[in-house]
Amino acid sequence: MTKTEFTPAPNFIRNIIAQDVKDNKNNGRVVTRFPPEPNGYLHIGHAKSICLNFGIAAENKGGICNLRFDDTNPGKEDIEYVESIMEDVRWLGFDWDDRLFYASDYFEKLYQYAVQLIKAGKAYVCSLSAEEIRENRGTLTTPGKESPYRNRSVAENQDLFERMRAGEFEDGSHVLRAKIDMASPNVLMRDPTLYRIRRIPHHRTGDKWCIYPMYDFAHCLSDSIEGITHSLCTLEFEINRQLYDWILDELNVDCHPQQIEFARLNLGYTVLSKRKLAELVNGGYVSGWDDPRMPTISGLRRRGYTPDSIRNFCERIGVARRDSVVDIALLEYSIREDLNKRAQRVMGVLRPLKVVIDNYPEGRVEELDALNNPEDPGMGTRKIPFSRVIYIEQDDFLEDPPKKFFRLAPGREVRLRYAYYITCVKVIKDEKTGQVIELHCTYDPDTRGGSSPDGRKVKATLHWVSAVHAIKTEARLYEHLFIRENPDEKKDVDFKTYLNPNSLEKLPFFVEPSLAGATPGSRFQFERLGYFCIDSKDSSDQGLIFNRTVTLRDTWARIQKAQQKNKKRGKR
Image 1: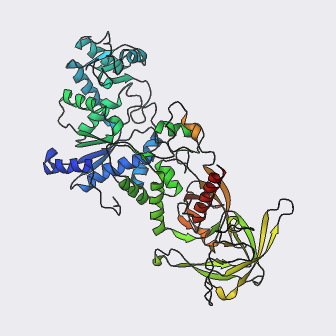
Image 2 (image 1 turned 90 degrees about the vertical axis):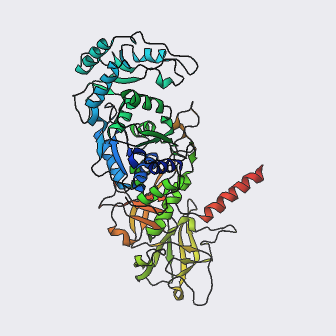
Image 3 (image 1 turned 30 degrees about the horizontal axis):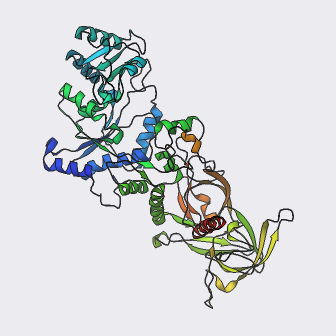
């Protein structure tokens, strides 16, 4: 495991486990597990659980963490999800060594445990329909109604359960239920279903089984079989803890893990429900599970996030007992902080405005020295070509600039990064639209490298590319996937109502020629534009595609926003 730069902060789970180790509980062992269901791709919320489970194990001498797939629902599971999950866990910097397990490894053991409950009079075969079982379960204020099949004899229950396994019955005709308490204040304890008939092939066991254990039954027993000491899960499973303990107590297993719940990660301007993420994928609202707008680990990886940035983010948000919403700006801060240290600086232009430097010799090309990363001198320098015609950003010129606009304007002098001071002397517009299409400037040859020998100062430095040398690529600019911080807030409104129609913008992107040999997955900071990653899926030898990972802070954008707010206030 690669360690983050942070010393792990104390939290209530670390404190519980530290005390257990001190008290020699479980003979001082610490065994955790990360137990995903292979019914979708992992998202940033799972990253928190991965970091916690593998991290806790690594922090304790001799501690281990298993990877186990809780694959008990073949109708929604796929080998694609299994492979993606393993890739994501490894990419985050963790490894399970030889401890890869599946709940399906234990299907025979789980079946025998169910038979043991039947023999103890703690489980019975119920022939009510799923709808009838729901109707009889009662409410939070009214007790449930016992099934008419609740008092079948042990022999009859054994016979029916064996015949369920043998495939004699149709789906939905029978289930195996625990016999607990239909008046329990915990609705989950009102004779929950333990097994159901499902004639669906399993991705690992094929057609061997036609009955499958429910998650609650398989999960706690899988933990016990593997010798897990601390079963860490999110708060929505707090209500399940009573059933978790009941099953293990009634079966009197040798290993009874302690279930501890922590707050799940809720992130602003996104959803972290695999069901809802699958809805976005299947409905074509995004291009796939690895769409860079998705909060999946594969989507974040494709967008340019690093494993370190995600681990650092998970450490920053900590582990709490209560749910809360984390500002997505914290995730963006984590990747900026990481890439600021490691990403090479380069230049590119998104919305090009042609600039002709009239007094620069035609046909002349200079090779200018540029720093690869001011944060890391060891990254060295590179050469960038400068010529008579360059591109700058359209936003870097205003014909009639406001007071606090310091970039290029008629008669104004600015610095070109690593190059020269230039002054705008002429503006050419489209005769029909009035749009500025070309600028003519002069340069001061004594300012090579971006400094003036006479000490005069300019207030703006612009990025640029040489027009004749620039490589034309594509940029994909991403915004938040949703326009509402909490898309799930209004339960009577479909969360997709709040999808951001401007979450993706594609633009031609003119980049400096040093990027000609860049490979997919490479990350760069384009000066003044943000951090970008070469798309690992759609880029090819015929053309590079740059995904913007995150923007840089933009002082002018903040000024404009403040000005707009002031104008609105003035109108009121």
